[in-house]
Image 1: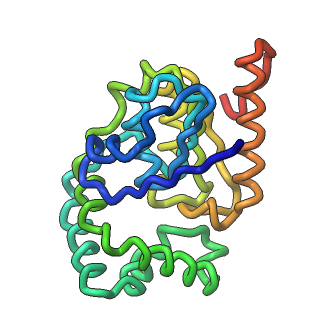
Image 2: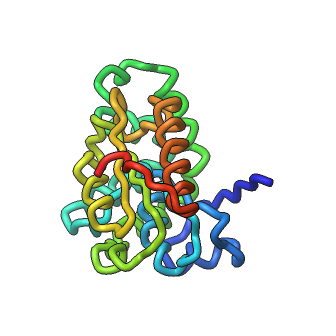
Length: 216
């Protein structure tokens, strides 16, 4: 039976987020995250050695840089003040592919998502600023990792996904055409097909079948 367990990134530290995970995750389970959730998933992998795999969309293995502190806190204050739509508007060119910048429906959907999570913005901002990066840990993780990114992702550029796939012992990278940071919403069919192919690959490896990688 398939079961999805959503975990909200309303925690200010990876340790706090770890406490929210189900305690019985094992070889039949996958962890999947988007953006900050994907970054958090990479940090959690060393504590989840029996997972079947990890899917991270719009992630980076790198720690945040000090230069981001002021802009992140300014954005946090803007959202706290209730200007969620304005905050998304200010980020918009970095969030979607060029052909989707004028797509009103997509923007409305992302604003609605941001409104739902606005109460967690302080915790999420602190988590984003404090994460140490996974350069020292990801290489020792046996869990297969699929890093997905949009070809025009300007928030976490495609080279960040390639970097994750190179660091991970069993890493793959997939670049989604005609998509930006929100590839999952911009090109849902392409993302779904990519995940399905990858799942078949790791299933084949577990059963002793040879298979070609997605990207490397």
